[in-house]
Length: 120
Image 1 (tube, rainbow, N blue to C red):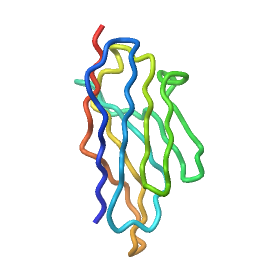
Image 2: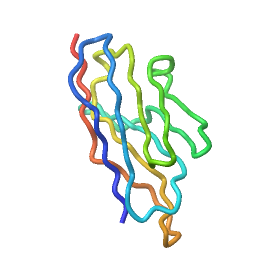
Image 3: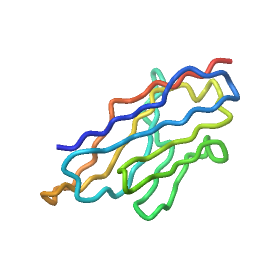
Image 4: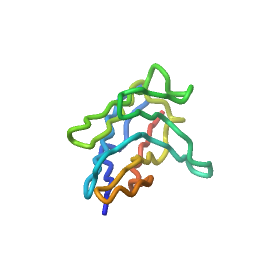
């Protein structure tokens, strides 16, 4: 079994910062890609940022220069630093991990989501 748990969301004023964390645990052999999606009310889930096991990053155009993704492979944890937040960043942020288990089964697993609310 593999679990992914996010933390770090909350309410912040526009221009402020938050740091999201996401830790994977369980019968993990290897974690390949990790990343974050967001889902705003009434909208589809969309990619925010991703990071490969080797550290290659990818960002949505809307967050480039404001958000930074990083990971700690030893802790199976990915982080998302959110700076210069805007009201339109308000959404539920979901972490995912592309996991290979100790049984050599590979799949994508998701966290439960963490709410980020940016007030104007």
